[in-house]
Image (cartoon, rainbow, N blue to C red):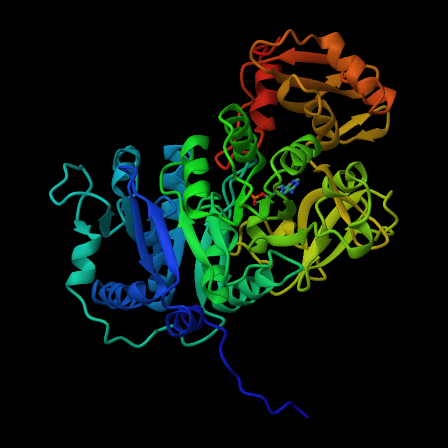
Length: 540
Ligand code: AMP
């Protein structure tokens, strides 16, 4: 016997309908390219989104078509997050930090029909526009009419809205319809597309809003520094209007100074981004005595938050750090590090030890760890294995069937490629990517932990560890370190510092001082490039 409850489709338009009725006056602020602040509300955006969706249909967009965005975090991008799926199409966000050839590959692989482009990004797109001949229209946002461009078939965002009307029925009729798409930032092989559905997006937003996840409420002002092209800004543009929270969008202004200004002036309560951004912001706040204590939750993920940075934020700036883990393939939220009641009374050092871990699985994400033979490992805090996941906002297949089928197990789990431990209470600690681990004399060395230990040294700005071939041990760790300007940091000082913090066989064989750690398009340490530079003798 089935239950007798309504089959209510979980579609993205429901979030918007809710926000316009219940939170219509809630604000969405955007730092425009000229530095001025634009303010609108969910209520004001609603008819614009309907007009835009109708305009897309008039342009010939059919259900399931891919419509791309090449844009910063702005209110227009927010409008597109609703208008495109509302028109029955797929909102495909393009990562503007990728190389032109990769971007051309992605636009063609996705077969994008229309691309919405921010004015400041036109020159970037022009570099590969001749490689994407199937795009039918380019729609310019934040660009003056008649702007000079080599792009063909140009339209203007505000013209589309002005030339349409809001008498439009949402075309998102089935919750299983595709709604959004992001390609992985891909440090190996070609980028792969994760295709989100309406249902997965809505369920993910509901999960994100829980107290034990991001805990977003109507009193919050959320600053997504994480770009809207990186896993849909971690789902925040869907979670915020669902909870009635305000949004503060940084536009193209991702430097620490404008970010600190935005936080101070808009009294931001939740800010989300990768550790690199928070490292830079910390330097700014310390150097110029800024007050960002209005932030009650600094959400950080994408790569491991160094323990020392968490300690600095919490003890010096009065900002609580919320360490989370996720993946493009998981919409992205997987685990969140919320301290349990009994941990609240621990001393600070013990709390920061816990916060260095990636947290516990949120409801909706099932996890297991397996060894190299695929045998399940115990949750004992010791056994290290590959993490596999399943749940309603985790992919079952990449876009187009032939892409990386080896990422999925025969019994339907997704292989994350992360090597982790799980403790008996489900606290997950990332040790490495399977491809980054160092195997020395048959023992694993976690590059993530070693990096975190090195970054604890007060004169270290950044550190990345890679495995290098070794005749005796097969692999040994090598550390690339960026020293704080003006310090006299030496290899010996780092070794002494590490000697009381990690096992002896973990001590890097060499420490190389570099001016910068290469980063991927989403701000993670690019170890593939580091390894190549080392192999080619560029690092020595
Ligand atoms: P992406 O799909 O670009 O978001 O990358 C996902 C990968 O980033 C994961 O598989 C992890 O390897 C890494 N990652 C994400 N969050 C964290 C975190 N909090 N700590 C360590 N690694 C992380």
